[in-house]
Length: 341
Picture 1 (cartoon, one colour):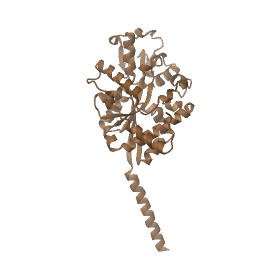
Picture 2 (cartoon, one colour):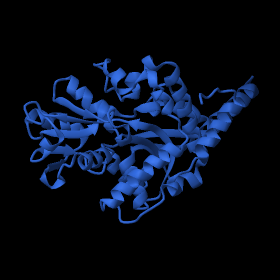
Picture 3 (tube, one colour):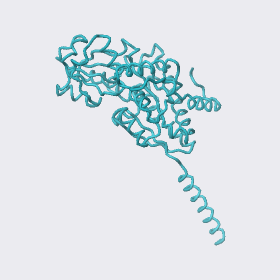
């Protein structure tokens, strides 16, 4: 009996030691979001997080996921430079700014080709047309994804930038700035600002629904260093997001809130306005970076280069890497997973 107890204890110690060794070997995948702590991860990545797909796929690949939240894409770029994150969801302007400055990131996925930007105006501001913006306090978080819309909108309508009192303000601070009367207008993410308009904080003035070509893109970036060393983690990550995309396409009503970062939580009527169910809008959420996404990215880069925001002209094809998506799709299909084309 004593001998059997010793054998059992030895077996148990081997199992415990094995489990501890496996845990010690588990690597960490650090994912950043440019949407801030309040909005956290949105789009299909948010769905993958809520359904546990990220933990599941990365766990199978031997990784634990850690989430980091940043107020904007500028902070995401700083985190990449510091080596604090391995991948991130980010808006197009900061993403291409990082590429322009060669900070060591690569574009591995497209979250959305048409993320709308809105303009809100303060109640009683007297702004009736674009030229009325001149002489007013206009908020925009410079260097974020609203800037592409901002530059195109002002140029198209002949608004003199030098006559705007531009206030560089993070998106989360736009509503309180309207409430205090310190700003007259703001450019920013449509899901966030239209929710503020629905709350009566300010009036809706414009959205890029009128000019889809001025809307922004949502990107997935990875550190080149991490891509080289831990490609399988990025493949696992994109497998989780592909699965989440299929969930969104099949059950859009269920996932509107998560997809918009919770922005339409109290105003579900905004779902139809932000994400048109009849035009296949959700089907644009294909992770593979296509010609449309590259063309739009090049137009953005060229505009900001022309305006002197970037010092060097670059071909954005040098920023693109579709191999991660292609491998993720290949592995899912081999497992019998059906992917909507």
